Image 1: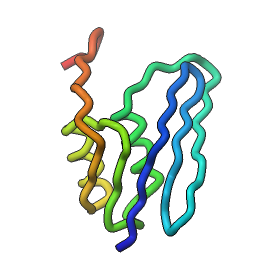
Image 2: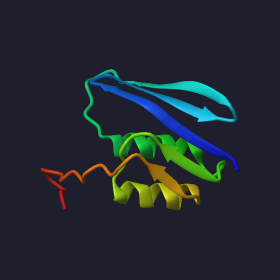
Image 3: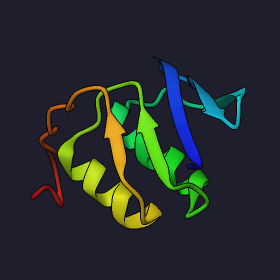
Amino acid sequence: MSTIRFSDLKMAPQRIDVTAHHAGRAESIVFEFSEPTETTCSLVAIALSALCGRAFEAVSFDFPVSEEATRYISALTHCPVESDGTEPREEREGPGAS
């Protein structure tokens, strides 16, 4: 079964580091930002799932991901998604908030 697992998530204001494990290899993935950026584990998981596309039969995150994000990622990747717990849903504030 072709599975990808993401672990060792580290978030800083201008950088996100995570390790991708697939086919017996571990590769570092880095997102760098020119400005300080606030994010959540769930948003990082969605960004990582976009890199996966439909290439895997399962996607796993060793960090908490919200139920809503898990459903979205499963629909995007067409495969089961597992995470280490459930990240609470964040309420958005300001214009356009639901």
